[in-house]
Image (tube, rainbow, N blue to C red):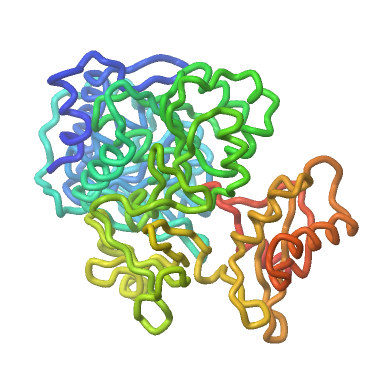
Length: 500
C-alpha cells in the first residue's frame, strides 16, 4: 500500500483533468498534482532520502504542501508536519525531535529560522527544499516517480499531539490507518462524494485538516480549497462566498466568531451541506444559533492525533445536541472507572477506544506509550458517559474534571451554562487546588462593556439558578480574549497558572 496511490493516483484513470485543488490564485488538476508530487519525490530521493526517513514539512496550506506531502509518501519516507509560524526555539525542537533527513519550507520561514536550520544540517539534515528558491530544480525533475518499497503496516505519518501537557509528541501512524478511517468515517458516515468541495478552518499540519481537506476529498475525487493565511471569521466567510464549499471543517471558537461577524448576515451560505466540528466541546447554545442562522447541521465529533481522526460523531440527520453522537463503524469503546472496570451506563469514566487507525507509539516516549497504547486499545484520558442509546457525552479531560465539595463537576457543563448568558462571549472554567480544596475559576470574555464585580456576581447567580448550586464558579475573572494553542484549543494550562 502506498498513500499516494490510494488517495491521489487512482484519480488519473477517471478524472485526471478535474480540478483537485483550488486557491484564490488558481486551480490545479489531479494530473498536475500527481506530476508535482512525483517531482518532489524524485528530488528528495536524489538527495538521499530513503524509505522510513523522516521529512519535515513547514509550509503554508496550498498546492506545494499537497505536492510535497504526496511526494514524501510516494517514495516511502515518513511525513512529519509542523506549524511553520512558531518561534525559532520550536523549530529547533521539531528538527531535533524528528531527526528529519529533509525539510521542505518557504523562503520567509527559512530566513526567519536560518540559524536553527543550519544547526540541523550539521546534525544530519541532508537537504532543505525552499519552494521559491528551488522551483526550477523541482520543475526539471521527472513527473514519473516509482513507489517506495513500503506497505500498509509501515510507518507513514507522524501526527503531533497538542502539547497541552508538555512538548508535542509524535504519534507514529502506519499507512493503513488513513485508509481505514477514510472508509469508515469519511465515506461511511459523512457520505463524502465526488461533487463535494471542501474548505477548512484548521491548517493541513493538523491531522484533523489533513483528513478533511486533503485525504478525504481526494479519496473520492472531490475538490479541496485551501488558503495560506491564518483563519479569521471574515476570511472564512469570504472564502465560502468565493469557493462555494459543500463541506466546511470548523471548530467551535470559529463558529462563534463567524456568527458574531457582521459579514455573516450577508454571506450566502447556501452551498454548505455539512459543517464539521471537533477539537473542543461544541456548546449547545452555539449549535442552536448556527442552525437558526444557516439551517445547516453541525456534526460535532471527537478524534485525536493518537487515532488519526474522528471516531465518535453525530451523523447527518441524527444530531443530538449536547452529545458527540455514536461510534463510527469499525470502532469500539469502553468507559472505564478508576478500578479498571467498565462503569454502568450514565456514569462518568475514561474513554478507551479501539479501531484500525490507532497509532503504534509516541516516538521517543516509551513510558507514555505504555500508558496510552494498551494492545489494540488507546486510553484517551477523556472523560465520557454514554446513554442507553449509545450516544456519548463529553465531560472533559481527566485532569480538567473538578472535584468541588467532594462531588465531580464537569467544566464543560458550567461553560455551556455561562455561554447562554447574553453578556458572555467566551468562557473557560478551570480549577486550582488551594490548601487541599479546589477553587473554580471562570475566565470570561464579554460582549459589550468589560466585565466588573457586578457582572461577576450576576454570572455566579446565573449558574446557581441553572445548575446544582455547588457547581457555580467561586471566582469570575475577565479577559479581552481567551488564550489558545496553535491548534485553536483554549490554553487551559495558561489559565490555571494565571489563577494561582
